[in-house]
Amino acid sequence: LKDIQLIYSEFYNKLEIARFDSNVGKFVGYTEYGVKQANYWNNNPSQIAGLRAQRETYCLHNIGIW
Image 1 (cartoon, helix red, strand yellow):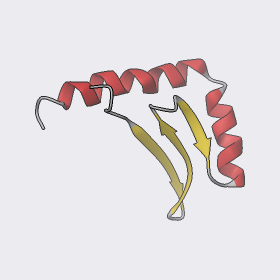
Image 2 (cartoon, one colour):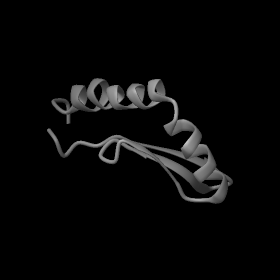
Image 3 (cartoon, helix red, strand yellow):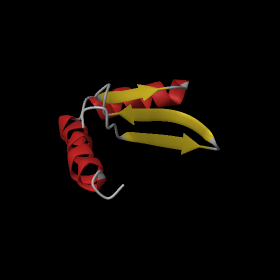
């Protein structure tokens, strides 16, 4: 179960600007704007904790179904 990962991506104009990866545990920006947004989101501990909790509630819950 430890190899399950949640990936949440933000896109603008078909270009991925930022991504949250539960294995990394933080947002990573891929464009200049995405880096700024990732830094802003990473400074919000409640948002990071919520996304980490989504891995447990969504991914691990559905592992038995697949």
